[in-house]
Amino acid sequence: MISSTPMPTSRIDRRRFLAGAGALALSVALPVALIPRMAEAMTQAQARALIDQVMRDVHQIINSGRAEAQMFGDFERLFQRYGDIPVIARSALGPPARSASAAQMNAFTEAFRGYMARKYGRQFRSFIGATVEVTGARPVQQYWEVISVMSMRGEPPFELRWHVSDRSGARRFFNLIIEGVNLLAAERQEIGAMLERRGGDLDRLIADLRRAG
Image (cartoon, rainbow, N blue to C red; front, side, top):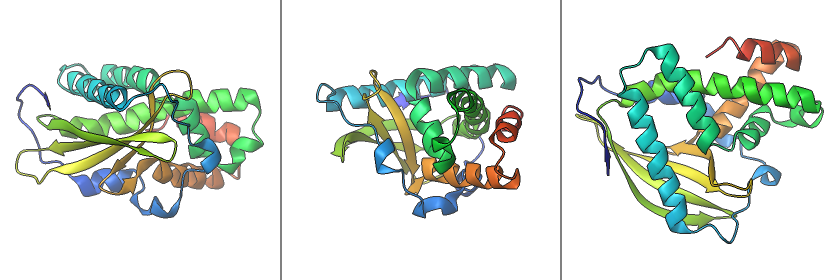
């Protein structure tokens, strides 16, 4: 079990968290071609250990007492270290990724990583005072799904399911599901709407993502 240092906490507003992630995007699926395959060498214990470490690092960041801007930098490094950012970014962009140049995809991936760090860094701060326990892991299609349960004072516990693969050459997570809400699918819908509002101009979207979140 992972416990944070006891600190004054505010009640977690899960509805707001999920709404901020675009909770209505449940019908959007991760394209099969983008699902990382589970390498035979990766074990259940290794998949669980990855998420244990992720949650330890998250709690260390939110309990550090550092300024918000510094915490965002910490979260961006966490996503870079443990997340399969190229897979996540390409899936979030969706079909436009097929026509983007290599330079555009590199720029989008970098901007998207910072955007995610700022957006979810603010949300993770709501988890101060929480305890998290990894309760299991199971193979799903070609990757591992690691199940964890988060508990907050005065709130019923809720479930987080992490999708983990090592196809990229290192163990990484590429999706997170909170109480049945697929956050990668939600981001794909949100990024699609942002791109549409900019007339399909990917360069404008990249520039705006660098300032957003």
